[in-house]
Image (cartoon, rainbow, N blue to C red; front, side, top):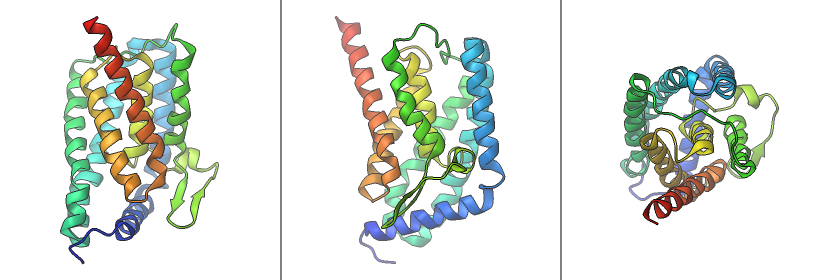
Length: 229
């Protein structure tokens, strides 16, 4: 295909890439990811840091899947679309690999903070974006969003890095600056870099991902300023 980047081509190729994944895993793995996430988060909110190991193992497995499809297979897919499109997309596999690497170390030595008691009320506003990532409505370029209740179980969450990042980064934001800061910082970078690239290319479902990334980055700056005071 052409050597120049065409946003319309990128969005259409991305849509087909997502459709292929949903066709293969949407009716099997998607509900598994949704249900297991609800169980893991419920345990975390009830038992707090006693569930850090379970939390780490689950999301390490999830990121292993994400890297397999959106890392390994994606490279060959985008190579066929065109080198310029692969160059745009390649940052995602790199960040996914590093994130998976960090999750593996989190399993070995859990540092996540899942103590959600006595948090200020405004922290929970992030659940608006967490819910969006978990639901992740279907989007068709030129036609807009399709909101369906079934997507609360069958959406691209767990299958796609962006909605999965929204949920995990949102949950980790509740207790920031406690927790695994390396994973937190990397997910923030993913949200801002990849989210911005996707929205510029025309993929509007990731606008909340950018907002979450900016919010997380502001918290990071705020924390750094407080430490230096």
